[in-house]
Length: 171
Image: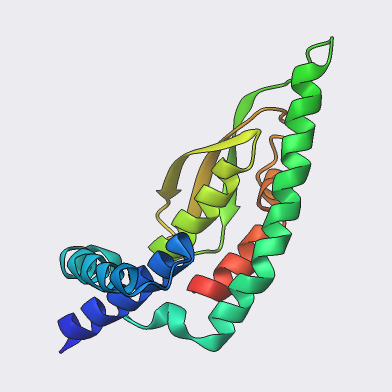
């Protein structure tokens, strides 16, 4: 029964994305979407679903995600502008380095989303996710302009407003 729930929720997720990507409501497109989403769900559900098959279908999580998207887009724009100005500047204004960033997130999905948000924001790349003996998670980030090596300060600067929203979505 759990496997069927996992396949069904993965199917719904895939079909929603199919509809968003195609933006077509032709009968053939809808049927093709159902078939493709079903095949993808059957093969990927065991890898996609860890515990709760309907985790993302919670209205509070969806609302948090919808609120997070514009916040992320603003941060993305600011980072793009910063890196563009650095690239177009006559003087080299970089201080690259690797910093250790502490996170309170525990779920694999939450850690993956946070690290992807950081990586997709220009000027930073998540290199590794590590867990210590106390089960505290750390991200190792390559940063184009290291402002501090202090874990707490670097964590605050790099994670910015991402972590609280990602935590509400996936923890």
